[in-house]
Image (cartoon, rainbow, N blue to C red):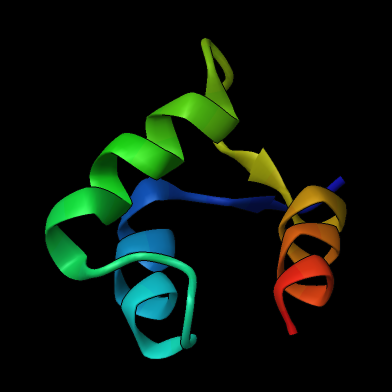
Amino acid sequence: GKLVGEEAFIRIAPGVPGVADRSTAHHLYKNLAGDSQGISLNLWTSFLSELL
């Protein structure tokens, strides 16, 4: 499946109210991604829908 990489996550996350500011977005991404090369698009959209 499609993956959201760290760079894309860092650009998008601060723009969504309640997700993270730029300084904490890196930590949030690493927690969501774990050892993977990215977070799945499905996980990312589920995460956002829970917040919105």
